[in-house]
Image (cartoon, rainbow, N blue to C red):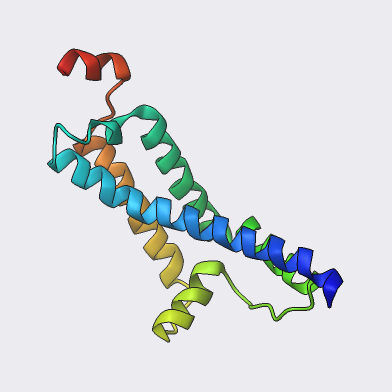
Length: 141
């Protein structure tokens, strides 16, 4: 229906945002590690703004999983898909798409554990590769 198109487009935009955030969290850790191994070219990966944003993003995911909260982006996307008279999915964003991509069913406890382990890995990178302020970075260069 023509009136459903705005809702469908908004749902797709929320999905794209969600994918971008997931990519930032997952790829961000790899970029931090690689950036520190490929010094001095990638010093920006230790900028406090980048590291704090990355830490905050995974902290939200871990907190949501431990508290049993469905991600607000998933909830918003499903609401918009319902308004557009589209099919919705049950469960969380990651679980749904992992199942779709990998055809793998995991027990519910696997996801909070995986998120927590990943979150711990992010915290460990703070210890292994501390942040560097812009002023300190300029002094090093």
